[in-house]
Amino acid sequence: MLVNYRDEYKKIAMGLLSFIPDLKDLSHLNSEMAWYQQSANRPMYLWRNADEHLIGIVCLEIGDEYVLIRRLSFTPSDRTGRNIFALLNAVHDKYSEKKLVGTMETQPLITNWGKTLNG
Image 1 (spheres, rainbow, N blue to C red):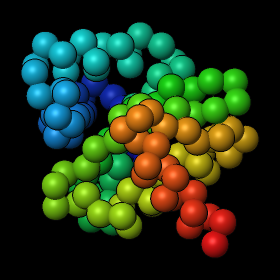
Image 2 (cartoon, rainbow, N blue to C red):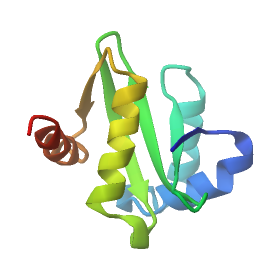
Image 3 (cartoon, rainbow, N blue to C red):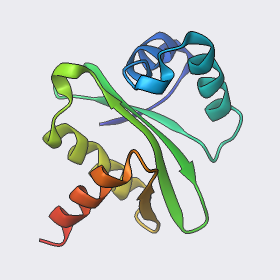
């Protein structure tokens, strides 16, 4: 389930984002978090599993016709296709009028997810 980012989730969000190799440096991670918080068009959502644990995060950039999946991270034990696809399904449902696209890092996941939609 997608959960809107709130300041009380900052440490959890930072922990999840720190699994991304280029966000291991704390100053870079802090500036990345601040960048998302500067605009309503750059929301962050945490992913809650059936056990009510926050196990993932997705950072978006919303355009007129697209939703760019900029960052996507899960805890190592929860980094499965099932969880990733469930999160992408939830983002797609939330922004159903827009096309999901990715960065160089996230596009392969989105392409594989898209294949499951088309059968």
